[in-house]
Image (cartoon, rainbow, N blue to C red; front, side):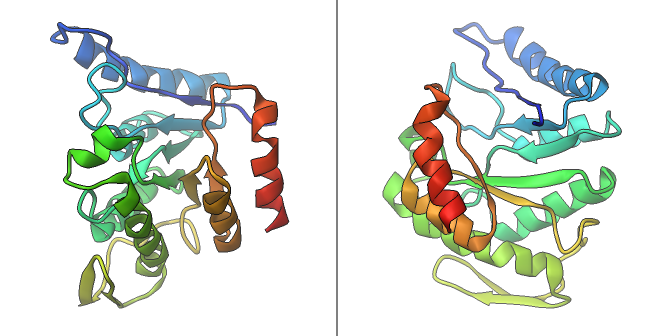
Length: 217
């Protein structure tokens, strides 16, 4: 069994002038303490416009901050929103590869579509639209890491032939995750060979059918 920590960037009600910067800095301190205590993973979220729930808008930057202060713990974006209008896939590939280089191969790309309508509506999209946005990006990013020259002509984004650099230290590329709570996404992740993060505040037994679905595919 492995243990990790998942920070949240929750600041509570207004006023935020003191609580917001203190909370975000302390989340970095939690990551460094977890490394010293022997924890295996540090997870950081990406949220937008969720006033009380979380003020951490940059999962990858939080992971970089922790990664540069630690020696062993793995840092995981939980989640890096892959919808191209929110985070362009080329920028995601570049940023994660940069973190992988600077942490000597300790980053993992946890992905998703956004935790609710408030987040995705902020960028002009609905929850229903984000599934195919994520699906296209998750298929393209590994190619950016593993191909010398990459090009893409998709429905939601296009890239002329380019060398996407830097390349990650981990080969063939950093591990991939997706957050999921429904069987179709779990089944798709299993078929693609990527990990599934099931964040739940209920009894672990509730997740047992999803675990069986993943293992069966």
